[in-house]
Length: 423
Figure (cartoon, one colour):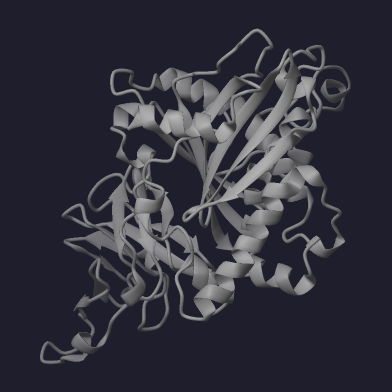
């Protein structure tokens, strides 16, 4: 369990909160590039860490991320005209560039210098890997740009989507790093008890803290002196990197190698909402990611064009479209889509879980380590220090894997071998 005090400490992310101050030390995904696709295209609302913002792409293709509200009379800049290198408020015509500078104030005399004294909050942004990243923290602490392997992949090798989750970010991350639930929640064929996740439903978890966060292995005993081992990487404050799967692991597969790596970024919108960015990449330069395969995999998981995207259709309001007959005869949950199954159980807990009521077991070890890491990070930043994972050099080349190993092989040795092959 977690004390009520620590639960409050690590779930609240608004301006001035300890965890909000931690989150603001990292570059954060704000939206997909395709959401503001062209110069002078319509602006979009963005909410990050409890702050209401508006994003736009100006006439020169530059991206701006501004405070949503015009400093004149606080009308929303979302209503603004995106024109001639700036965003113009429709109320009185005040116009701001991507840096938040007021470049025109047509309701004031031409001799006035008032506009030179007015500034709209603007956050630094960078466009990378189909995502627009923002930094909301103190300028003196701005880190280098994030640099994970998938972010260096060409567009032909990468697929990214985003989903809105109606719960606190911590529930989303804890669901993602809980490897054991896949034996139950994601059992999508009740007639098949032969895949490795049904052979051993209580794996051993080994967690190792690192400079970027932690890595952890789930180790399942599958008999014949073999283990089914999955290695994950978690990069602070909200990145998970894993191997990509779109089907259960059958017993006759010795090595799972789909040629894909995948992951999530669970970004706090505010205390009760989360943006889940989902990505998939092909790490082989000679093998572009098949767009149709990526879409199929995303649809299987409950996202993408054939499933849930930023606008959700399966929510608490309609009980995530649970099918009780399918639950009785076909699948463990009766809910379509792996991602939607995750969303359902995490949102079913309520907007913010009271973790003081929990009873954690041995297979919750990664969650326990993660919570303590957040608590420590909050205290470190409050004391003027740096949280883990702000330096891209610490995580630039991390790799997950998903393999059947002999009992003589340790997951750490295999991880080092995989990394050496990658380099």
